[in-house]
Amino acid sequence: MAAAWENDDYYSLLNVRRQATQAELKSSYRRLCMLYHPDKHRDPALKRQAEQLFNLVHQAYEVLSDPRSRAIYDVFGKKGLEVEGWDVVERNRTPTEIREEYERLEMEREERRLQQRTNPKGTISVGIDATDLFDRYEEDFEEVSGGGFPRVEINRMHISQSIEAPLTAADTAVLSGSLTTHGGNGGGNVNLCVRHVTSACGWGELEFGAGDLQGPVFGMKMFRNITARCFLTAHCSLRFTPRGAKPGASATMARHLDQNTTGYLQWRWGTQSAMTSSIVRDTRHSHATLALQLGVPHSYLMMSFQYKFQDEDQTKIKGSVKTGFFGMVMEYGAERQISRHSVLSATVSVGVPQGVSLKIRLNRASQTYLLPVHLTDQVLPSAMFYATVGPLVIYFAVQKFIITPYVRTQKEKERKRQRVESKLDIAKRRQEAESAVLLMQESVRRIIEAEESRMGLIIINAWYGKFVTDSSHKQVIDVTVPLQCLVKDSTLVLTEASKAGLPGFYDPCVGEEKSLKLLYQFRGIVHQVVSGDTEALRIPKQSHRVNVET
Image (tube, rainbow, N blue to C red; front, top):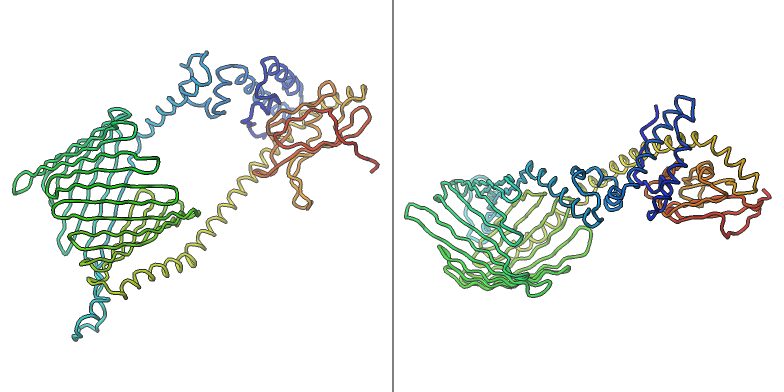
């Protein structure tokens, strides 16, 4: 049974240029209809194949002959014609207006898809206390029962999750919750937030939360673009505790100082009142932040810098220094993309009086996994060394012996799958092309007889595909019959489109650079021509002669 015909390039199918007039379209359409009309074939199999190709030619002509459908096809291709809602569009719209209407219809379809999405986001954090690995050697030796092995324990866990539910095109509800345990005590809370987009310049948000860690809280937040380079965010809340209601408020104003630099001024009032000023500069190669906070109970000065390597893994190295009334903290680390959806980072934190900690972070799509490991309460060189070298050794070992072999295996599976799919598609296209060639045989015989009588254009041989020196890797197909079928009045004209879309052609090597080589006779003289895949071609033209004594 013949496969259904498919061809997304209507211009190539009709062999007309993209600027073809209605007269050119009609002439090509009539010629192809005469060639593929089902009534011209008595064999049932050929008749079915002719009917399928005839219908495809008719579909292409219907699209290109209608100005509105042609404008949609020129801008968005065959996919654009499948968008619902075009029936209400006025037929005299310009291509620009059609593009705007398409974007509107796509937005409506996207809104319908959004209503079915929840966009889940989550965080899992497991805190580990490993201070016994280092601090025990800095203290006076004491006999420890149980064999004297260092004790490593989990002292903190935190799990949070949120989901979104679009209510309307402008309203979204967000439900979030979290559970926390620390030192044998724990609790949780739940929050409900409703956001309303007022315009392209701003939005507002209402929040309600409750839990056993803190009392019920009501909050309101708003965002507004003041100018093209300045925006404002404000937030106020009221929390109810056993000691009474505690109000809080914050406001942040930001201004784009230049293309890559933004300045922030934040004011916060409540249990931890503070005023913070910061400057953030983000470029293609680096990210730098300078911040100063004056507040109760903490005031600090913080500087951070991140360098971005321009490699395929998006590797980044970072460092920061923070000093204030609480002491001083220095951090350094690295970040790297380990797969398409996963980013792994490790940061070493050294501070007084915090000690030394290692923070491992894995971002997988919209989920975040944190593993903070507290190594020592003191600043010990041995802890800093193992916190720096340990993750690097483990990462490169896992990368070499687990990740790289796994990725290599997955890529090989994907290549095999693509080869199978490509092979199946090529086989299908080849079957279609062979069927088209069978339909052309009678017409080609008449064309050759007419051309021989006037010493016109005869296609001796023609090949299409990838030509290489090694004949064992040559991927070409014989297109002598399809090209001869396109000859009219001793002239062959091919437009600027991929020749794989022509009737009787198919792509024998998907993704490879292809060309057309043909040997033809005109006025008794033999010529050879080589043409690129999308190069326009007109024969006869000036070409070099070849010796065909062989």
